[in-house]
Length: 120
Image (cartoon, rainbow, N blue to C red):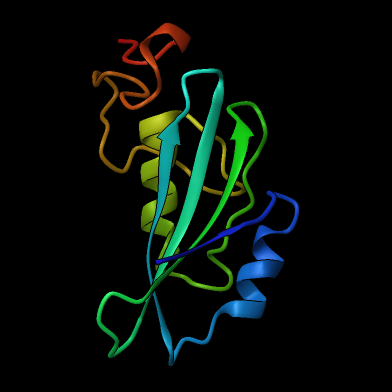
C-alpha cells in the first residue's frame, strides 16, 4: 500500500492527476476519527489486475470544514461520500446523507462520543 498525503484544497486535483479509470478502481472514501476534533479522510484506490496494490490519498481536517466531492471525476464515489456524511456528520460539497441512517437513527455513530457522536 502506498499512502500519499494531500490537503482538502488539493485533493480533487491530486486525484484527477492520478486517476486513470482503466488502471485504477476507486474503492471508497474512509474516515478515521482522531479523538481531538479532527478526522483523517482516506480516498482508497486498487489497481486492476494487481494483487494488493493500493493507493490511499489522505488528509486530516476538522469536522466543520466542507470536504470537496470527487463525484464529477468518479461518479461511483457518491456512495462513499454519502456514507461519510452519515457516519461522521461531515459536510461534503453537494452531497446529502441519509444513505444508511433514518430520522430516528443514532446520529454520527462513528464520531467520537465526547465530541457529539452517537447522538439520538
